[in-house]
Image 1: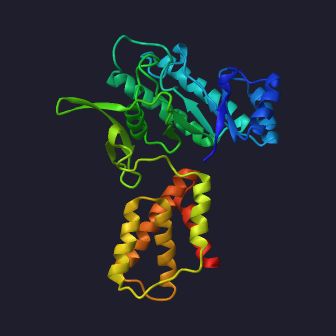
Image 2: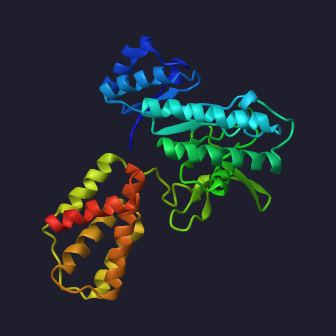
Image 3: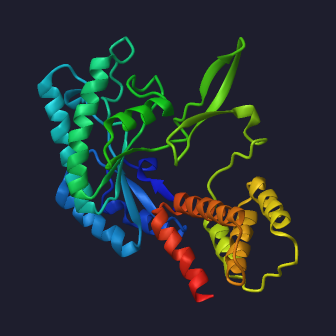
Length: 325
C-alpha cells in the first residue's frame, strides 16, 4: 500500500513555485502526489514529471469534465469535445509519467438537469468513456472513475452506481476509485427499519454482498493488510522448524480448519506453512490438499490486493520462499 497527497490541498496547477513543497512531501515519507490536470500544457507536465522522478515521487492525476465538454450532453458535438478534451488530458498524463487518472469526468461537474440521470445519458457516458479508455490503454494510463454526492453531480452519486457503470463499460483500462470522502454507505428498508450497509464485491465471483454497518466488526470486516503485516506473513512462511505430532489427519485437519475460520491472516499463514512443510515429509490427505489450496488462495489474494499486484506474481514470490527453504 502506498500513500500520497493530492496537490489540490495547495493549488490547482503545480508549477516551479511548488518545488520546495514537493521536496518536503518526499521528506515527510509520502510515496507520491496527485497532480491536478486542468491547464493542459504537455511540455509543462513533461518537465514536472522529470522533477517528480528525480525526487522519487510517484504520481497520479485528477481532472473533471466541463459543461462545454460534457460526456452526457445530448449534443454530439459537445460529447465529441468531451472525448477530445479527455484525450488531451491523457497526453499530459503520459508526458508526466502518470499511472492513474482519477476524477468525476463521467459528466460535467456542477451541472444539473433537475432530474435524475436518464438511460440515454447513462448510455452516452458509456460510449464516451469506452472510446477514452481505448486511448488510455495506448497511453499506459488507468482511468479511475470517481463518484460524487448528489450536490456535485447527478450521474454517479454512489459506489454502487459507479461499480455498475464500470462493469457495463467493461474495459480493462477503466476502473473505479473508492473515495472515502465521497463514499455513500447504502441504505435499505428492512422490515420497516432503515438500515445502513457496506456494499462489498467478491473478487472470485464478482457477486455483491451487503454487510450491516452496525455488524461490520462482528463479522470481521477490516481494511486490507499493511506492508508490515505482509513482512510478518513472509517471516511466518520462512520458518523451517515446524513440529508435527502424531495426530490422525482428520484431527489435524480440524485444527487447521479452526485456524482458517478465525479469519486472522497470520493464522492462515501458519496453516499454509505447516501444510507445505508437512507435504515434504509425507503425503497429504485429500482434505489437507484442499486446505492447502484454500490457505494459499487466501494469502495470495490478500497480498495481491494490498500490494496491487497480480495474483500470479504474488504466488510466484511465495513459491520461491518454499523452493529456497
